[in-house]
Length: 268
Image 1: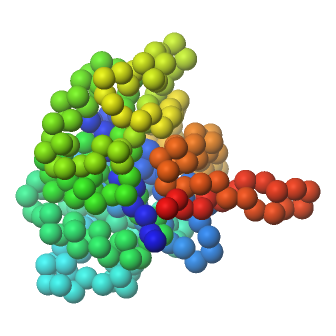
Image 2 (image 1 turned 135 degrees about the vertical axis):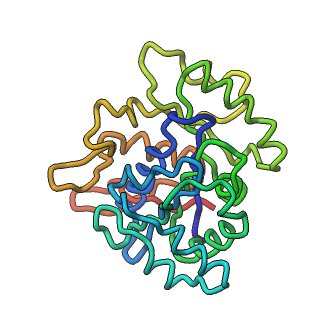
């Protein structure tokens, strides 16, 4: 069964889009032959993920909106319109609009988009944005198999999440399917378990410096010389996050000289 992961943050700038991008890249690198991985931007208020990916001209949501409204959107059309991340044909991006519009993209549109993407992609990673009052964010949080909340270890971020808890409850989002990831965590910061005190969410792990733009090239969080993204610096942290969420379990593959953990097997 195909899986959907929503990544969001309680306020702008905590690193949800970077984390969604990183997870999509990791899942692509660990995919089995023939599998497609999708990265869907559900944030129509501040839809800048396409710029992070170097797909500045993408207006894919604009292109898909009339097709969905007419009931003509199919898996084949979705794949034809999707952008390729770093020219990788099996790593798709679906997002991009001409201008931010709060009301143009309805919940029905995102439900149709998610229904089809879940049929196409083995893994769909959703950048859900950071304000649960827009249709894309609500759809992503309610429809995801698991929700990763990206939080900076700061008073403002923690207070923002506490404020959002009532909204999440009103949306009937299962707290058991949500976990915390601390971004820009430093050695001198509090321990993650203490930072989560009173929030009642499972801590999945930390990502040191992920998304810190001053250390990045062209606003994209990691590039190698050939222009291909790599998640090498955060591979183990990302794997641990996915494993702790229960979405995946380590799968061993036989190699000459022994058995090494390499790929993921999806959880139940």
